[in-house]
Image (cartoon, rainbow, N blue to C red; front, side, top):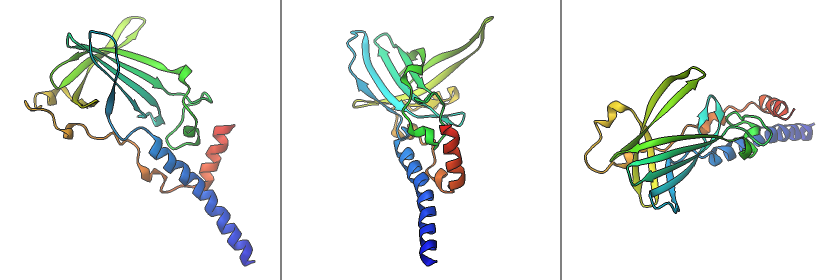
Length: 204
């Protein structure tokens, strides 16, 4: 009888441990620790620099991959390109810490967004336009502070009102907090029944 109890306890412990390992693995593989883009080679003579970065932002409770590319041209303009990968190879969108999140992204179903940027001393901005069949129905200007250090370009969103408060000296790293949208403790209260129920749902 004791042996049966021990085996049962071990069985349920393993059932609980597998989702825990899954969530810890996902936490340390989500690209959400740094907001720095790395400098890459660009042969265009008009380009001062080109930087790329990989991020996994949480959008509407779904984890999505974004490949960001920033071009800085000599005329103080540039290009901000977002390659967004919302789908996995099974053609579904993954929720945070789901079993589907273990699958690779589907590169063939990527969305691309390109914005012309205007580069100032410590920040750059671009305009997002939302269009319909009747023309532009809304537009918004997005501002980002930036800092170039060695081969890295750090960026962070900033409100227009806060731009006037930027110092005249070089920006410190305090303006560029790490992007930590995902909480490791989200897996603290794992319910094995729900985990395996969700696994069954995601497979079938």
